Image 1 (spheres, rainbow, N blue to C red):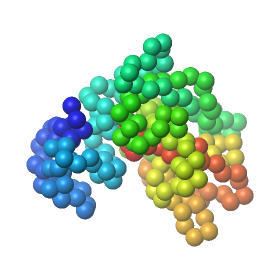
Image 2 (tube, rainbow, N blue to C red):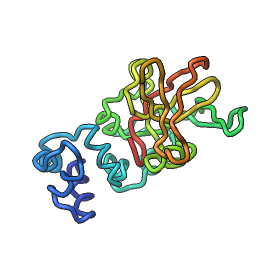
Image 3 (cartoon, rainbow, N blue to C red):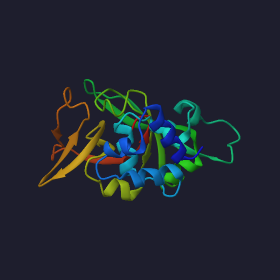
Length: 218
């Protein structure tokens, strides 16, 4: 099933017509939605993100109806032709209270090749990590599998309001980043419990990678 057909199936499951869906997404016409569903045009990332905000499961959208864990599988001998291996990262407890670190696991997982192609992400720059915590609810849930881009471009040129894995000192974070005059702000989607914070200028800051897709986000 193509991504256009998955969009249509999800829309119809919600009982919406094409104009109903278009009305819920700013800047998108019913004609554009129709083209996406018929496969005449590939949906851009802004449209896909809007679907996720409306409750669409992005893994189902990109991969089909099987659960994310069956699509992103632990490495085993003999990789299928339509899959590629990517390295895994993991959040772990840090020395600080409630803090996390992020480390390479030495393990690999298989991801469908067409998923990386849709994300325009080369396998050597792709990493798989599971989310930790609830600061990005409702967009990203605890233990959601995330595909991140660790290329130099992703790490050196952050895009405002996109989601990144980054470190401040020895602690790792999964947040949106926004540049403001003279400072960088980290933003949680669960803002009621996790207010915006300025990245401390005096602390070492490093972007690990940009989150390209997850079970409920990009």
